[in-house]
Length: 139
Image (cartoon, rainbow, N blue to C red; front, side, top):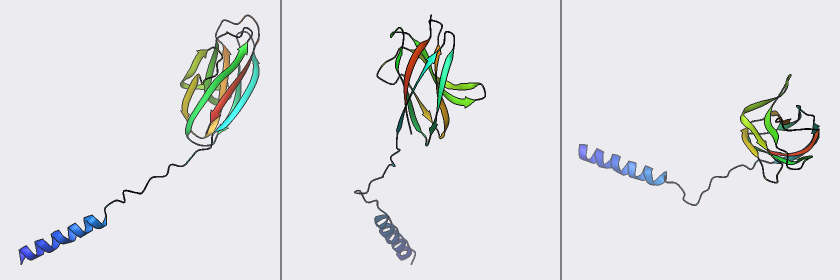
């Protein structure tokens, strides 16, 4: 009797395991996040900084590119990503770099839904006002 019950239990487990097997043809769909590109321009005074704010709609990577800065065209500027506060643009930890203008993102960070800001600042090498253009790509 015990043996019959054990065999019945084993058969039931085998049927259950086969019935719950995964379909190897199924796939997981990853939702796409719409990415937005925003371009800002401004001027940074000697010893100063400027920032522009933008709204991030979802969690994802935000990329910042200082596309132009000058004169001179080779000047290195501080570039930061942060949150808007009463004090201006408070940079996120680790989201700051000194860079010359270029065509590839110089700064990227994982961000969440919030109003963020991009900051361009003098790193101590300006002798006159510098005009800039910065591009931000975000979710």
